[in-house]
Length: 119
Image 1 (cartoon, one colour):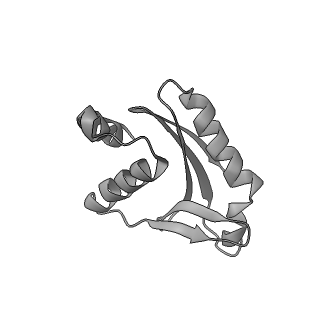
Image 2: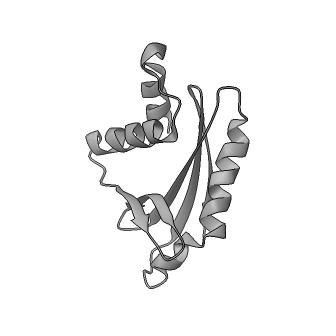
């Protein structure tokens, strides 16, 4: 997360776009360039998981939330984590023996924060 935070900090403010899709795309591109394979917009019977990051030993379910500059990052990350649980996104992976980790990521202005929970 610190690598991603540092890269975001290097983006000049005139290029900054105040939309969740902007951060979602940047997050994806950074991971791919780091050699990490991530699936985006993974469909379930109750919605879409923003990102699924599968490793041999665990699976990360990722939800992004965006707020305007000045929003409470902690609240955005909690809201993202709550959505993963409320929509029971982990249910899609019940037959997979790997532990699931829920990652809620909040963005506001050029700030980023996250909450993580193991299941």
